[in-house]
Length: 354
Image 1 (cartoon, rainbow, N blue to C red):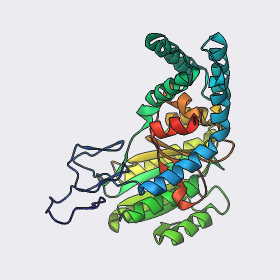
Image 2 (cartoon, rainbow, N blue to C red):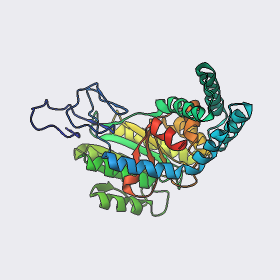
Image 3 (cartoon, helix red, strand yellow):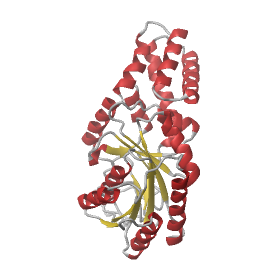
Image 4 (cartoon, helix red, strand yellow):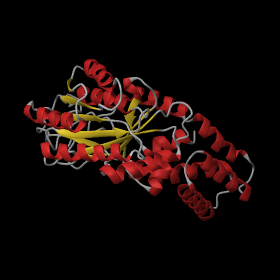
């Protein structure tokens, strides 16, 4: 069983229920099932794992703001005028579209901003920016969800994504999160399609001191089956399955993903318990197309958004929230292990519009 918060020493506490939710906000005392920790709801099957200490989180948020600075500057210039008029709304519409928010999300955001400005009698453009932050936060809020492990043993997590999105690196970072929380992890090198993928995952396994199941030139579904079976036999808490990167247009490879899912289910009738898609924050509206295609093929349970540390515009999360909402478990702003953190709608909206 897991207990990932710091307990106050003076008073005895009840034994925590098995499982953990990844992650909510830090807490210094015992947490009752059903209470809220940050964005994570603690249920009878899970206890929230604290986020990094406040200074580390603040440092990471600074990185996120820096990564989204170009977009933030473009939108913020809209509010530098002296009055609220149609020109402001037209400029805001253009800025949002340029930030990859998409037509539907842009129309929703503009409509809500106009309504709140009118109802509130707002007269200063800077106040409009604050309203936009609130509206964007509300739009993104449904994407907040805790990744839960512990309800099943092992919790089988299947990870997909196109080549170059940062899929294998994200798996390494997730492994660090889980291992650091005290969960035992087993990796499955089912990406037999890409050269050196098995070796890359092996490096992450060595860094995190976890076991890896792999076969040189083996069938991806067979590797996945062996890994889930080994995870059950060895009593591992988590099995992370690294699948081959592929484009949604590669129909034969997408069918292979479906096969992996079916075979994993044969190894464990309730698996996979999570199906995650890693998307590159730089790919704009193409990321939304990937979410649609992979969700249709695999029934996604969550997203990991990477590379929000340079030219990424970030607005695509608004498009996803508006048109195809799939929870965002983590977002990444760099290559270091600590550069992957949990998603907060308010933090993201503030960083995007900083």
